[in-house]
Length: 88
Image (cartoon, rainbow, N blue to C red; front, side, top):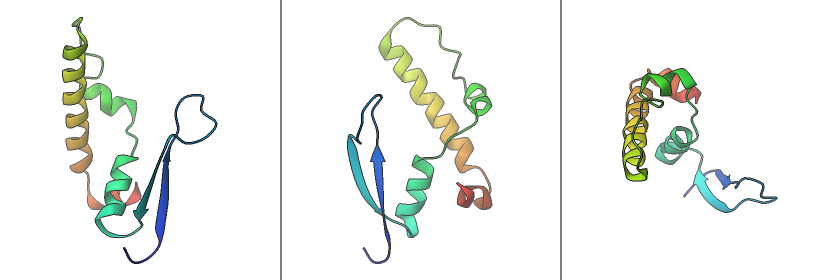
């Protein structure tokens, strides 16, 4: 990996230090994936994708529903213009 690197961390709720660390390049595909992985979507987008529409009672059903919501939100995000993606 040539060029500058970025240190990414994941913090758990109530933790006083990160629980996971990653080192990533700041250019090319790795940087784009990092931007997509850390992108936040407005709640309206998630609600439009069905976030609040689950009415079942099982965890596997909820998990499947949330997987589809995440896929729909990713599809919507990736359908944005390239200028929008570079702004993330």
